[in-house]
Length: 256
Ligand SMILES: NC(=O)c1ccc[n+]([C@@H]2O[C@H](COP(=O)([O-])OP(=O)(O)OC[C@H]3O[C@@H](n4cnc5c(N)ncnc54)[C@H](O)[C@@H]3O)[C@@H](O)[C@H]2O)c1
Image (cartoon, rainbow, N blue to C red; front, side, top):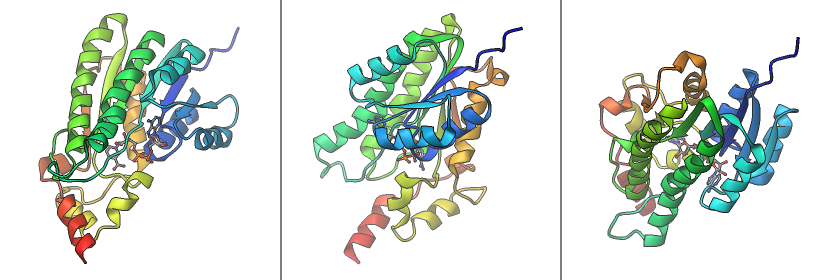
């Protein structure tokens, strides 16, 4: 009897933080993982840590040709997780348009480009998961681009679920609160941000990348086979309260 082939998974943004935890989780549960990231060298190192048959490739989600090449190269795939994203700070009245555009370009347009090309290769029964943010539903001063892009991604997830559902493809998103990763290192350097977040989090702790990976693994699994179009709040209950005034903390630090 021939051995059942491993399910194929692609983790975009898998070289760091949440994406790397997702890649580890998928590999640990028997999936064959391709780590794709703008940081091609970091992705290759991560794939080497996982060992064969896992592999890596460079990709920039803002460049459609590179995303198309990624999915044409991988071929038929069972699960795609897109974690590529970053944020930035600045009041609307001061923010450079190019800074606004670069965040939207990666977090929203990039997510669309990944959905477009992943959607062509996903098998029936496949799963597509994006990472939105608590900021998709809670506004934060100074984070206009990020909040808008992530809110857009939440809606994009629902549209994609409608379009791809008839092909048996499930499309969901995880919407994390504050997670300790290289992305949030800078924010935690501003005095008071973390304390402010924790005061507004019923479970009283921030997340670790593995918290998000567990949710993503569930969404990719057969246990979630009737679940699509969902944007899952994962934040210790922080969505029930208010978001910290990060800009005020950053301003206070800058003027100290
Ligand atoms: N850390 C948090 O608190 C938090 C909270 C909510 C949502 N998120 C979201 O989770 C996702 C992962 O964040 P993280 O904290 O793990 O960050 P991270 O910086 O540790 O990892 C992001 C990865 O995405 C890659 N990347 C960035 N731009 C890319 C592009 N254009 N093309 C391909 N790869 C690109 C980076 O090279 C990096 O490896 C992001 O979308 C972020 O917005 C993070």
